[in-house]
Structure formats: C-alpha cells, structure tokens
Image 1 (spheres, protein in one colour):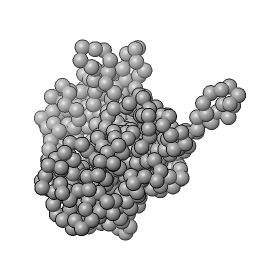
Image 2 (cartoon, helix red, strand yellow; image 1 turned 30 degrees about the horizontal axis):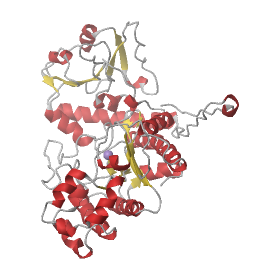
Image 3 (cartoon, protein in one colour; image 1 turned 135 degrees about the vertical axis):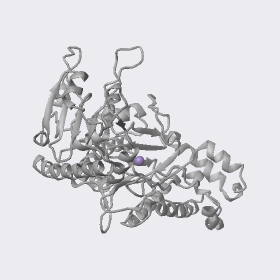
Image 4 (cartoon, protein in one colour; image 1 turned 30 degrees about the vertical axis):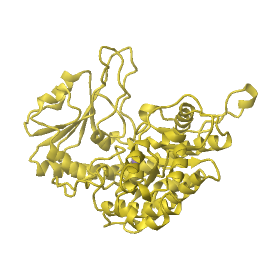
Length: 472
Ligand SMILES: [Mn+2]
C-alpha cells in the first residue's frame, strides 16, 4: 500500500483507459516510524501486564496458516491473526511472535522452499529493528526455536495442530484483557486508520463520479472493480467484502452479490466499502440517488441525523444512549418524510416502529478488524454489558472514551420481510403505506463515518478524507 500515482498521459494516443489513482500516502515514513515505536511500547506494556495478571511467563502470537480448500490444492485467501498485526504491520503466514516481558520480542518467520508459489515477503521496513528475527523452514523448526520450555507460555492464534504444544491456548481471560485495551487506539493506529480512510475516499469518489455522470451504465460488478482499481486493493486485502447495491438491493443489509447486469433504471446506489493500511481498517458507507426524488430528501434527513449523532459522540457518553437517541431522531425523520401519520411521531419511538426501518445497531469499534473486538467489555477482567433485547445487534455497549475509533452508521431501510411484519402488527394504521411503497425501489439509505473520540469534540476521519476528494 505504498504511495500510488500512475498517470498515463499518452492514453488517448494509444487508446487505453486513463487510470489516475488519486490516493497518495500523506504520512511520511519517518512519522510512521516514530509513532510505531511508541505504539510497540504501549502494546509491549499491555502484553506484560496481561502476563502478570494471568501469571504467565510469556505469550506467543501465531499469524495463522495458509489453509487449503477441501479436496483441492488451492488456498483460501490468508487473513492474519489481528494481534500479530498489532505488533507487526507486515503479513506473514505460518509465523509467530514470542513476547517475554523484559526481552526483545522475537519474530519467527517461515521461509518456504515451495517453487510453485512466490515465497512470503521477507521482513522489511521501519519495524524490523525492534525485533529479533529468526527464519525457519517449517513448523518443526519453528517449535524448536520458540523454545517452549515453560508451561506458563500462552498461545494466541488460529487453533492449528501447532498450538497443541501449549497448555494455555486462546485463553478467554487473556483475550478479555487485550480486547478491552485495544479500544484505546495508539497514535500510530489512528494514523493508520486515517490513511485507510483516505484510500477508501478515493474509491468512493471515483465510483460516485462514474455513476452520476453516466446514469445506468454500470453494473454492481463493474462498480466494484472500479473501486478496487482506484484503491489498488484486491478483494482479499479489503477489510470486508464491499456492499455494492443498486436500487432495491440496498435493502439487504449485508448484500453480498455483484450483479453483472446494469439495471434498466437507476434509482439509488449504496456503497459500503473500506480499505486497509498496515492491517488497520476503514469502513465507510454512502448512499446516492436520482435527483429530486423523495428518496433524495430522505438521504438528506439521514445525513443530518448522522451528523447530529456524531456531534454527541463525546467522552463519557454511553453508546447505548446514542443508539436510543438515533431511534428517537429517526421517528422524526419518518414524520418529516411523510412515512408515518403526522400526529404519531411520539408514539412511533415508544412502540418500537423505528426498529422495523433500522434493524441494525448504530455502529461498532474499528481497528485491526472491521468489527473490532471488545465492544461489550466494561472492564478488562471480562465483565460484559450485553445489548438489550430491543437492540440485539448493537455491537458496542461501552461508554466512549478518548482515543476510541468507531463507526456511526444510522440508516433507514425498506426491507420487505420486516415491513410485512409491521403491516400485520397493531401499529400498521400509523404507517403511511402509500409513501412507504414508493420507497421500495430505492432499498435503503446508510451513511457511515469513522470517528475518533477525543477529550473535546470528535474528529471525523471520513469527512476529512472526503473533503480532499471533494465529497461530503
Ligand atoms: Mn460498519
């Protein structure tokens, strides 16, 4: 994910498509290196404390193995154990990091001699000085150099046969401690998520431009390709599978298809797509529509609601409260947009009608994983706050604190199965069904930003990145 600028100025002459990748890495390597040094210190302290609390001599983090498909010799895409990437920005399959409090951490890196595949990258970059790096050729040798002499070594990672050597494997108390603390992002992590936002912003900008310029020309499949090309991220590098939804497909919350045919008529487009930078994710959604429609007004209302909720995202505020507030405001949006009978706004929220239009939670922690772990932990020793029965899909129940990075992603959807339920409920008479029916072709709206909680006002990492590519 290095600095990418390709310009083919002679494009017209040789009749090829002009490719212009507008993302340029703004953060210098020197800056990244300085931040990484402090970041690694912080994580070393966290691992040391986790060892003290759990009476461990050390922790070994395995990156995971390159798995093969069933009855096949093809491999699945490789996804590294997140705690491996918390320590090292590069990705290596079949490798391990040994952390012994007080010692320099050791990276055991496997270099395969398989001539079918390109060998994994060799460790390189600003981080290598901080590690003792040992190269091995297979698992057996890896176990030897890891020197598992103590039974007080804990292993973290995909539960492969290699881990059977350890008495403590993926211990819940250890995870609780680490997961709780990872919500507080280091400056290095904030810088990485900021870069991931800039990369994704270039993709959103180009995709939106194509769609509004050439209405009804592109299929979901093509729009996804445009996004991947612009961000220079292959699908397996993205933090999650892009949601590329035209028209009524936007009503499927995690719509996973990529229709290869452009629809006859263009009504709306929802793009939920992020990027990764040094293992850290961005997660951004925008919805656009045909002009001068009621649905366009609805997008404006949700955008306003989203900005109002972001403004409330301050240190000390409970995310459960913000989620409730979203539903209160959503009742107002339903009224403003004539989707409910005018006089009923107050009881819309009380009757839980908004949940039929917004069944998912307001947002989640963001970091090494798009749905970063630790969203329910209220203490480092594993106390949980579960979401209420009313909002079972809420992924974050903590009180916000400085350096949390999270998404704020309200929406409103016209989901046939949920609307059927609402229609047969006692609240049906409160809904303006004629207007709701008109909205079905648009599917739904979601507006999602990544924000950083500070001691004062929040910082919106997405809107800052979007400004630079002239989007809002
Ligand atoms: Mn999200």
